[in-house]
Image 1 (spheres, one colour):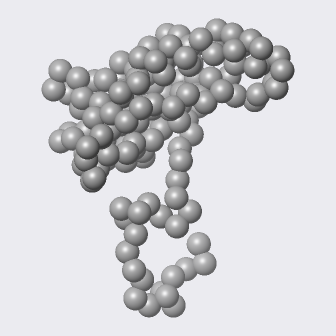
Image 2 (cartoon, rainbow, N blue to C red):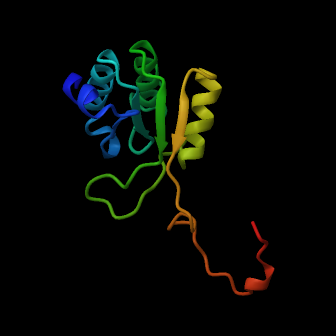
Length: 141
């Protein structure tokens, strides 16, 4: 980490979060290590299969609490991909349905503690795209 920081001087270091939290512990360790070695650490966080003890938001809350404790202040909020072996993404009952839900949760429970980034689709999310029958009804925005 130190060699990379000194040689290429990155503005930040991005750490991905495995589908369904499969690499959550490793992500947290790497993001923390990067932060402790002088990097601005951006930690990805998904809301796919993040249930703990029957609560679909508990693991997310714990991850955010650990990130805060470890000095990580940048979160890349993502819905996440379908879990391994599934073709379709489905929200857990009472859980998050999209990255916006995750962003709202972070702000509600952690205020301005974190800088939050999101990833988006310029043409709309593939699960939400529908054909427009009359393009003349579209606004400039």
